[in-house]
Image (cartoon, rainbow, N blue to C red):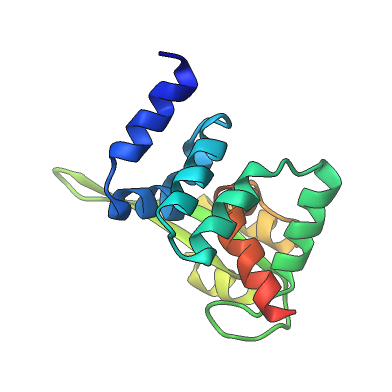
Length: 163
């Protein structure tokens, strides 16, 4: 049995709910050779057109220019926190540690918002000065670029529905 046949057998044995979950939340983590198999499986099962479009989007290779265009278009959307278009969207992944006498607590927080909303959510301490400088530059952060890569299919679908 070839590798492609093994992949096909694996995905054909999964229930619809698991195929949908893979497409909606884990597709960017899959190997490229899985995309055509997953696309064929989604079509065979007559899953929704949105689901099929997400797989198609991830199957298509983007040039650096196309990816930059996607990032620019996404950043110009209204802020998901305040709903305004005054500032470009950006993202940060924060790790906040609270130290107590006997233990410490670590909280992780992903913020996707405009510059103003992100700065309002950032603790104004020396510990977060690097993140504040990163956001004030108004360039896309590595966290935003990773978020867009991982959610490319959904983002392209959202942008298409806005135009």
